[in-house]
Length: 440
Image 1 (cartoon, helix red, strand yellow):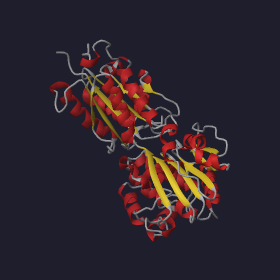
Image 2 (cartoon, rainbow, N blue to C red):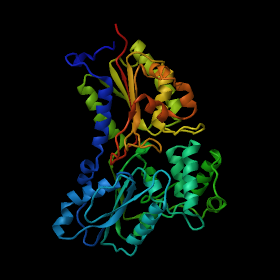
Image 3 (cartoon, one colour):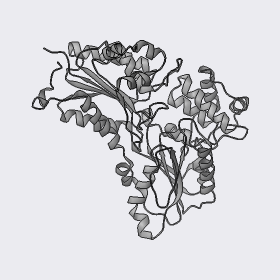
Image 4 (tube, rainbow, N blue to C red):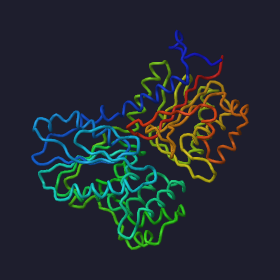
């Protein structure tokens, strides 16, 4: 039997339940109703236009309508539109909510992007554009440059998701083939003031990578994008290659005068979510060690690395003494080579479990805070010391599942998937490894 945390001896903790409470706390800390209102500005003299894109954008719009007292005091109403993932819409009175596809864009997203640009054209210096951005906005705002089609952008997204490129690399390519990303949306708003409130889902919280930076200047170049395409052998249509090679796909740069009135504030980020989870673990009597909120790399390789550290903690009490929790965030990648459904969190967890070999006293949970791991409406999964044994008894070979990139199939068959439904936020991946240690 696993040992009980010293400070929780009067009420032994269920490790699986504790991990789920930690995950739920991380998600709750980034809810728009909590993080958006403190950043709402004073009412401008002119019009207020609200736009946005991302899995949290509809909930952010709802928070704006509910809490922007400065606008209510003027007697004016808000106007605008935001686009979010199917199933993530929430009711708003004045801001139109459009649902579109993610991670591969569709016609609904294209029409939303076109209407958004039309909405912000012709504004003046007394007007304010409030832009609500969160993770997922890259796919939800497809607007191919002239010469490209929506089908081209759909094929590009599939290629980028398959090839194993990091999120920063994927977004670099997207910015240089888009008519709205890479600062182009903010440039279209000029001379109005643009205030972007962003919920970060990217390692390092670089604004240019949150939804591919539609309202911030982009220091990267077409040459950078072309280098990524070559490195990962991404198959692009001839027109897209020509845009990159000629430089005609160049994005808006940080020193562009049209961006002089643009400001961005990050209202929620992965580190904040991890800190909320850490507090839950500490209250349960566990020491918490934050290993970083920007871990990247192939999910299976990160899983192996974390397994080595975890075993050393469990067996030798170094560099951390159990009972403890190892927390991390960031965005790993999956190079899909098998016939499975992918999903970086379940791939990480499956590789972690294989490398741990049923290490006693170790549990783990990995999940995406938006409730969607890869293309599946499943946030992630839970790993227990007996996971591999239960799989063996069910006739499931964990190594085969990993080879097929089928972590979702593996954990679903065991009943260990973590399913949240739409969370209305997105602060990237959550990984928690709980180490109770071996019995004395």
